[in-house]
Image (cartoon, rainbow, N blue to C red):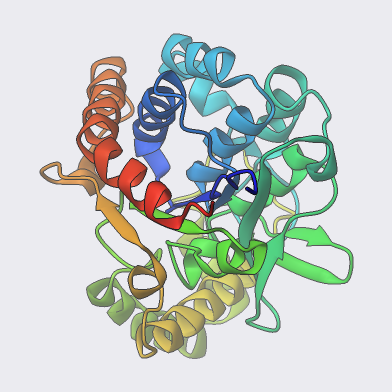
Length: 309
């Protein structure tokens, strides 16, 4: 008689922004129940939690998030002097490398991971699953227009949530037996359909004003001490290009939910307006624990159905 083969579990984390602690609570309950995630595919803030889980520092990451003051959080958004964004996430990457990933690479952790990104120039979806984990997680959090795009080889990358918040395809490529999608967002990608109407304004704005006038207009919204050398037109180009890609993605069929064995959606009123306050973060953490406890029997049942004797 052959030994039983344990089925593998793959988790897909959507973009989360200020709802990252939901995933921390969710993974804690799974671990306490002895359920291991063999594969994790994530984008945006979900990549940070996935990185901590795979590197065995989820407890430390949880403490960092809960202990961080608003001032410290804002300090992570460093001023930049490059192109295509208001800020850089270099400080976040350094924090991750020092406190969470400890310099580990994807091939040095047991949980196979893939972080979702988009090449802003070609419009192609890029799965980051090789190299240093901290760098890849930083790239996956790079919301276009807010944070400067990151060079990765010959590509210029931003947050994968630009095209789709629930990156399921990598899990299928990994060969996960059971795929569970966990969504904390209210839309399928970064830009909600209604917000895309802003694109028309941007197009008009770029055509109607000269560079000098654009800089004068933008100076009212940029930090006062932002270096004058920042190239404002490149910010408009990045944001406009991002919206073009989001519009294209919005017209395509969303394969995220249909490719999952189970989809779990966070239920909270006005999730997109939740502020980064300690009490809110703890509520979302507890909500993640409750959600995991409620769905644990389903996950175990799916795994059991896939077991081979």
